[in-house]
Every structure is written in C-alpha cells, then in structure tokens.
Image (cartoon, rainbow, N blue to C red; front, side, top):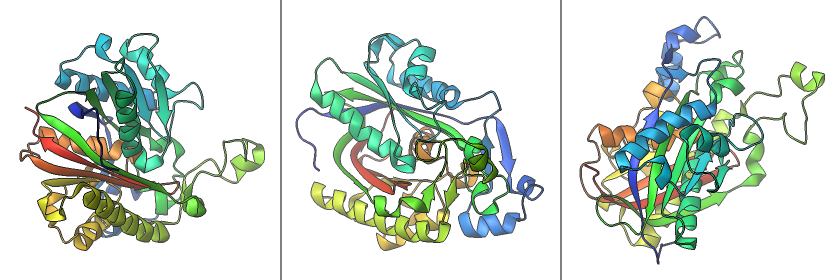
Length: 338
C-alpha cells in the first residue's frame, strides 16, 4: 500500500561478514562439484562462513553498530530493535533481545524477531515503519537482517550447500525526518503457504522434535527444490515489483536502482529482463557472499551505498523472495546519504 501519515526515513546502514572465505574450489573437496558448475548456474564464486563460536547475534552486532554510527546515534537513542533471521541463536529468547543486551541498548524497549526467511528484511521494514507510525515514543528503530546459514546446511548435499553463506546487514529507520536517506513510499508483501515444502527445514520444531530418528534422517538441515523455487521466485518478485510501482505511480524506467535478494545471479538477470531494465540498475554481490537470506538485501544495500553506486536521487526498489513462500517489495524515494 502507498504510505501516508508519518514519514519514515533510513538514516544509516551497516553490514558485516565473517572473515573466513569459502571459495568454490574449496567445496570441490567436500562435495562432488566444480567451480564452473556453481558459477554457471548461480554466479556464486565464494561465500563467508562464521566461526564455530560465532552466532547470529555476533554477526548482527557489528552491522548494527555501523548503521548507528552512520546515523550519528548512540545506544541511548534506539527505541526498538528488530532482528530478521531464520537462524536465531536459539528458539528463545529472541535474537533481538540478545542483540539489545550486546549493544547496550536501553532496557525496556521492544525487541523481537521476524522470520520470513529471505524476505525477512522487507517484512521487517514494514514492521519497523508500523512501530514508528503507531506512537511518538518510537523515533529510531534498529532493523537487522542476520544469518548463520552454515549452521543448518547439509554439507553432503551439493544442491544446497554451495548456495548459502553467513553475514548481516542493518539500517536505522527514523520517524518524521527530512533530508538524505531512503523515505518509504510504498510496500507490497505476500505469501504462499501451499508451497511451503519447497524450502524448509523439516525437524527441530513442534511438528518434528529432535529425536534419534530425525537426526539419522538429516532432517535438521535446509532442504530445497531449487528448480521450482527459481521459477516461483522470478514470477513473484516481478509481480511484487509491478504492484508496488503501480500503487506509487512510478514507472520502472524511473528507478535509479533495484536492490534484489542475492540468491542467484540468474534470478536477478531474469527479473531485470521481465521488467525491461538494464542489469546495471541491480547492484549485486552474490558472487562474494552467496545467499545470506534475511541479511542479503541490507548487506547489498549497505555495500552499494558505501561504494557510491547509489549516488543519484530518485525511486529505489528493494525486493526479495524466500521460504514460506514469502515475497516483498519496498519502494523508497532515495536521497544519497553523505
């Protein structure tokens, strides 16, 4: 829907990736694959892998600090924290509560997780905007997308383990601000639970609790039907983009950039083709990080800003697709951050 009422703006962005680089050549010693096979099908050349003692909250914190620093804010200025993730430190408490503590944010502010998988950050943006619109007691919301996907990958399954990596991205969203940043114009969110089995982790929840049988069946790892997900991802992302642009009265040709979910360069190319837009409008880093799920969009967003790739003002689109199935688009009026 097209936003009205209280304006909200992105004041700062940040990102973080673990230091360990796992290249395609390294994977050839783990599963039956080749660098050529991975690059040809996905565009991925390497990904980052968190250390054994690094959890999702540990990835989230440096990304959040970088966003707060860009925004010129301290821990005392944050009024709520939202963490988007499908790989929380633990089922409970929320990773957001852990991040609140690690950052030294004020006690008493709301902190909660959003799990919409790879669409999580776009869902989180709408959640943050809703908080800011709901009450004047919320002025600055910290929104983080962070994942340690390496913890839920089956490293014997070449169809999935080559695709994913670890990382985090963050923004600070502020109520009623004028000036540079990303002003939210419109949002489109959607889901399709009928196809939930196309990307899922079968065990570990209330339906299939941990047991010797679930462990033996390797049910605590990510499972995905890549071929079907590819087709649905392209269709859903294109349709979501078209809806949000139409509602805001913006033509695709007016866009100064699109930050897509970084799952697969072939998906990004297909979306660009359907929208009849040049690939140069789509900053991407999928070759460096692979699919980092909820961290994907904010990590790419922050890197594009810091590399000067979003130096032109105008409409900017964030778009994602993930397990659930879920999808979402957020249209911003972008004024470059200095």
